[in-house]
Structure formats: C-alpha cells, structure tokens
Image (tube, rainbow, N blue to C red; front, side, top):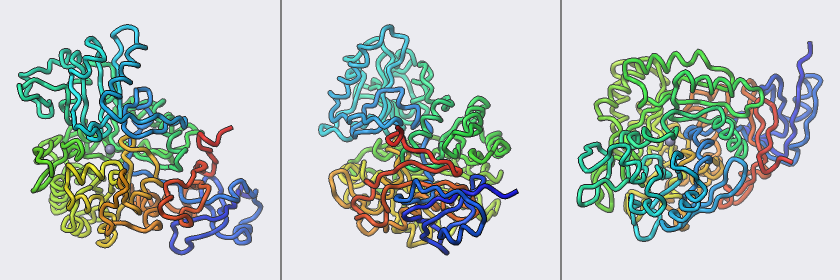
Length: 549
Ligand SMILES: [Zn+2]
C-alpha cells in the first residue's frame, strides 16, 4: 500500500541540518519527516498532497525548551504581580506593576472579590529588586490587604515567598523558629519572607495551594497552548513530581492525539530519597511514548542570584549580602549525583552561583571516577556565573550547559548594580565562552520565571541587552545562527533527544516552528519580534491563540 505523503512548501526552511541547511519543501508521512529539498526531489517518493498554507512562511525545527516548567500553565489561576507586562496562554496581556504600593493595590482588589477566609490568595511574579527604594515586603504590608486571609506572594524566581501574618501563625513560624531561609528582622521576628524549599514548604503545608504537589492535566493543556503560541514543540517540566497521580496525568494528555507538545518531565530529586529515587526515575522510562520522555532527574543545589540565595565563590555578593542557601547539604548533593549517575540516570543540575557550579562539576568528576560512563550529557542548568576554568573542566568531563540568557535582559541591570558588580556581570551566561571551548550548550527561559519564547531567548544571547538598554559583556554575544541552533538542536542534545527532534531531516518527528519572517533575514535587534504563526507537530498544524478564528 502506498504511504500517505504531505509535502509542505515554505518560503524558506532552515533545517539546522549541516548537509542541507536551507530548503523549500519538506515531505511528511506518518508524523515523521520523509525528506527535505525541492518539490522535484520530493515528488519522487510517489503520490503526495501539496500543502501550500505556509508558502509565504519560514519553517524552523520546532523549538525545544530544555528548562521550563509546566507550572507556566497553572500560574494563571493566580494573580500576576510582576514588574514586566506578561502574556497569558490565551494571548491576553497582563500589565506589569512598578511599585510595592501598586502590588498591594492589586492584592486589595482581589481581596474584595473573595467571600470567606477559606480561600488562599495567591499572587506570582513578584520581585522587589526592581523597586527604587529596595524595600522588601513584610507581613505589615500584607496586613493592609487582610489580617485574616492566608496570602502567598510568590517571587518570580521561585526561590522566595512572602506570606501573610495568618500563614506564619498557622505554620507556627515565630521568633523561635530555627529553619534556614526564614528571614527575620533586627528584633528577631520573622518578616514573612521565606527563602528556598524547606522554609517555603512550611507555609504551603498550611494552605490548599498545590505548589509542591505537582501539576495536573489542565495545567499541562494550558502549558501546551503557551508553547504553541511561541513555536515550541518539545518542552521540559524541569522539577516534576513523579507520584502515580502525576505520572497518570502526563500519560493522559500525551496519549491524546490532539495534545500539541512533547513533554520531558525531569523528576525533582529533592522530593525523592537517595535510596529509592534513582531506581524509580529509571523505571519511569517504561511509560514513555512518542510525546512523553521520562528518565531525566533535576538536582536542585543553590537558590537564586537576584534573590541573594545563590551560592557564590569569593568575593561574594557585590552589595555585601551574605552568601546564599544550599537546598541540601553539599555532601548530600554529591552523594545524590553519584547515586543517580551510577543508576544510569541523566541529570540536569540547577546551579546559579559559581560555587554551586563548582560543587556539581566536582560531584560529576567524582561520580565518573567511580562509574565511568561516556555520553552522559549531565547538564548544568542556569550555570550563570561559570568562568573560563569551569567551562574548561565541563568540556573535559563531557558536561553540557544550559545558560539563562533571559537573565541578561530581566536582571542584567540589577546584577551590575547589586549582585555581581560591573566585572562579573559581563561573564554571566557566557554563550561565547561555551562555544569557544566546545561545551555543548542551549539557552532557556525557566518559564514561568521569565516568559516562554525561544526567539526572545535567542535575541538575548545575540544582543545581551539589559532592560535599560545596556550591553552586558559584548564579547559573549553569539550570532543568530548559533542562537537558533541553541534553541533547537542544542536543547535537544542536552535532553538526549537529538535523534528525534531539533532539526528538519529524514526520520525525525515532523515538528516545525512556523514563523512569519526569516529570523536570519531581519536585523538582529528585532529577532525577538519575528511573529510566530504557530507550530506543526507530528505533521499536524496548530495555529497560535492569536491566529485562531
Ligand atoms: Zn527552573
């Protein structure tokens, strides 16, 4: 029986495939790419249907986001209080708020719509580092919203949380509480700001909020809608709960023929025991299907640099803040790395500060000495402050890096003024050095920490512009081709999926990002503004929210 073939025509196809970087047609059969080239070449496969709807568009491999969270779908059930404007999965723009008073006003508005005190008021996207006066939020501020309500204000970095007096009371957090991350004022009383996972967990425990329970099927659908809007066809959920109910939700959505996203849930190592975690994560692979890829583990080491909980080497924070917080003791993290590595599990390690990167490089070196393994592709994710000596060791040890280039725009000015100072700020998210030293790299959004949009992430790597318009570390800029490669094949490589996605070549899934313009043909300053029509995934076209009639 003859196979059914669809040939898509495009103004231009950027394949990311070295032997044929550019083409005009791609033939698709059974959800996979049959061939790429001219219409004459592809017609030799036999009868086909010509699909010309993208004849004036540019096709790229579907973007691959190797560090984001499915929570990007669920955050929208809460109130957005971030500094920058933000677009939700349905294409609606939420305006940013430029002052602490403005944040409190928005919370008061929501408070007025709530009836009883059963419901927790949750806001997200908060970051006081942008406010001129440098004032931190305290329980006294939230008293103006409600004295009786449980209120959670999640910081954009995910590593800090402000809570109301009611939450402190229910959680039993007071002057006598001796948990790292419970911030206290000069008199020794908790301010309501909670840093890192142990302290945050105390608060979530006394609410009905799902932060530590993992995501559900609804969240996964909203996550996929956002992905389609920005051209993403493969995305990680990089700190996933992997209890049976979570696994069943991942299975349910990915078995749905209409689900337009390939998911890579990375098990949250922090939620598993060292004894049972490695075996459990390895065994999850039995559930994998063509849209679901278990088998990755996320190791959480330090906190957030702009939250001052990242772990820095000497000379530490530029503004003199004390060093940050380890989410687990360094020896435990080293033992975890050895355990997962020995079980054959691939790890993506969250390392923001350079002390955290060094700990993980040492831990991988130790694990490799005890259990040699080629092509492990362990990846330092964020890896924001890595210096040349660390990239050299990563190259030697086969470690990949996933650099947080969106940080340069969103927090570059603050890194320069407060966290790193004018010297080290220039080496943050050093794509140029990674490329020069041969460290395989990709770049990421960490959505919902910053918006999911690979073209924006690529723009950051190419231009390195901060929000105020300053170029941060011009020598670390990369060119557009390298940046586009990083958000396609580069990301696929760090996920061990480069044999299936990341380029447009025969045998791979027919996953494309459909763009209105050729991103290599516009001035680099406007790379982020190239409009995305939507995606093709497995040969099926999915228009973005803005293109649906
Ligand atoms: Zn993250």
